Length: 94
Image (cartoon, rainbow, N blue to C red; front, side):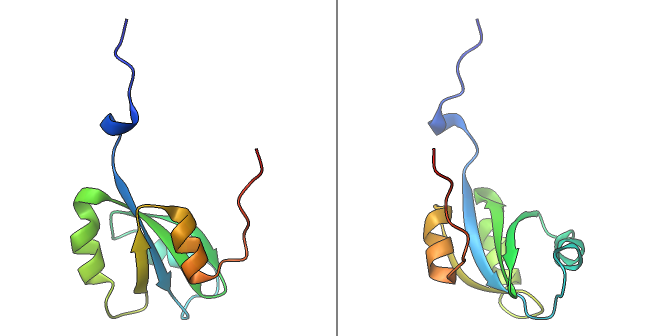
């Protein structure tokens, strides 16, 4: 039987909250971000949340200092980034 993949063995990630006022649509932003090893998670009102693997975090953070997408906050928990960026989306109820 295969060993169970525990939380400690899963890949680590960071959530990065950014402002991106130059983009009208999510698809435009996704196309722009395709050159970076990130995943666009949320987008609304010129703000976005990106998922970044922990090993890529430092390089991405330094890339997003100036340009069309500027990093504002980051955390290991998406809930904290959503609160800091004032996203209107509420968490799902289970």
